[in-house]
Image (cartoon, rainbow, N blue to C red; front, top):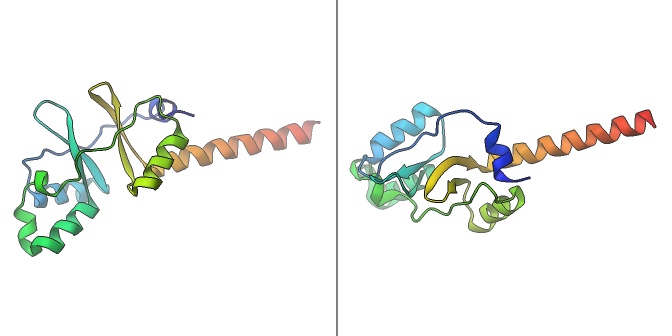
Length: 143
């Protein structure tokens, strides 16, 4: 299964932030949307990085409460590691495991077309396994 298969079935807006936002503004957005990370989009529409809960923790550890006044550009993880829609689910999961992160921008050329989490990939994998098991049970039952 490819990332394209997973994202073609989805229909929702991707929550993003800008590099010039304050960490406090970005944290408020993460909280309001109940998400753990979001892509940081620059003035050209490109992915400048990813801003996540882990970035907030690192920034707070270094700067204390003053971290909330810093710009996202100084706290985000950059450059962002990306995948294409043709990347397989297993390749994406392997990349996430090896690099120890949980979110990937999906790029079609220079355009971000989606943003997937490890949860999205695990759910798709689980759904596929359950469908296969159901088909096998049906085959055995009807044989």
